Image (cartoon, rainbow, N blue to C red; front, side, top):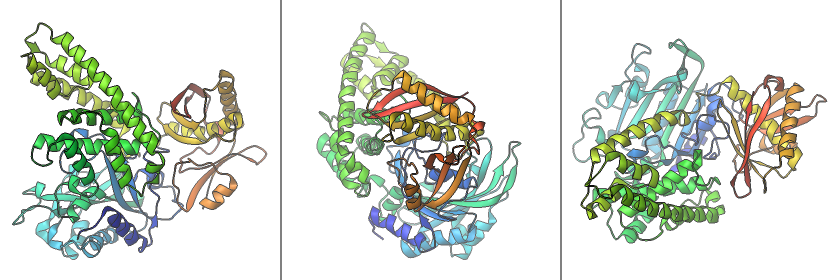
Length: 589
């Protein structure tokens, strides 16, 4: 079945809507209430509090298409199906249906809606271990639906088990669906895995791993599924390469024109075009969130993606600036994300500015190369890595410059340093790219509530035009972004801090209510201005001692019951992060 991206999304959401699932809005790429991630990394991410047990305002059956971004396997980008930015289709049961209904719905959507022949489908289930039994239940359901026994496989924890995201927490087995993309006579999933593309994953969160390491059954079981739009679209269009779908073809053609090279003829050139297309698409979506390239957090990821794309553009011998041209093509394609068009000038301007900055850095890098290579016959691996790490030089560029001077480059030493750096980077960022269930601790819960007090204090001190533009919480601190056109004075910072601490000392009640979005807005509830909200929402109110509300916000939580639990609030820093956007970092002592 040949189908467009928008048709696939529409068919999926309509299918689950007909089966009494509420359709969730596509949330911002920046997590609003998650301390553990810089970006939304999965469709389930905005649902963290509800997976942990809180009742969702829209009920127990949910579905969505969600924009996501992951950089934990960025080195794999360049093959036919890995991406940093991607869209995830998903459906959820929060204590409602279980394995049989979930698997049957997945099967019906694949075979009846998408018309995938049953002979092109294989599945895998959890094989069991000393902690949890073999998932015979899922296998029997697949068998009853017509999937033959020789296309049902059992794999271990590394493939068919989800979680916990930390050392303890929710977890459970999953069953994965694969689509045959091979040629000629079918070989089994176990025999030739590359002939099978994983298209959907149904996760059954039925256990809680306790602090002793053993599994306890959860009182409320959760179904969490995920289907990647790009990968599914390629399968349905009969191609093995995600970059040959409608999403990327205009970009690939533009890169062919700019580089005077043909996609698919040379492996290195093809990989370079895929990386450029992937990284600039991700950059466009990050920029649409008003994030600027920088050396910290989301801005650092953005800068890394743009500069990596530029480096591969150089590998293709693209002359002049090109990021803006590629970015514009993605803005034109994704018409269902109006924020791209709305922020077009900012997106394209930032891409161009970053490209100009990097051009200067490359110039300085060449000077550094001249300095460290003078009078030598060999460039050490650590020197080549310095050029890569500090000046963005790909090894190919260093080798090119070295060849002109008849210098030998220690490639083995370079790759040893690169591997060492990647491992350190992976360890340092692993906490930033978990699923979001790992850090809902007592301190982060307190910091969530503190952001509500801070938000209202800002409005009272600086004026009612102040609105939240985003927040990020770790166990160490809270970070709060808001619209304001100048630096705050020391007096204003002191006033804000004192007001928050006064409300903490007063011991104010924090109450959650579920109501319609319209009701919440009529009450004057604050919301993140760029966030899309469902028809029903959770509203948290912090009441003054006289019963009047001090703060009313639409929020998923979690929060404390009373402000006296918070301790002392202290502002560490106030700074600019973008034009008209300020940022406060604060702690609870």
